[in-house]
Length: 100
Image: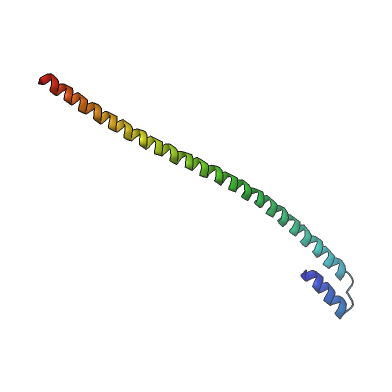
């Protein structure tokens, strides 16, 4: 945009110097190439960002799955601990009954 404004101002203020317009045109072409590279980079980064978001969702689901499994394991541990305690108590009462 600046180059176009400079070109417009230079046309209004003075006669263009020989080769000046071609230099400005070359700069415009160079800037356009740089812009196209930046646009390609932005598109690539957009794709990477999208992939990262998908992977974050997968990780979040896996985390939830792990939390559910941990909860189930704790419940199973509690049930087993209760069963072991009750079995020990029964063994104690059986021993008492035999001695008595």
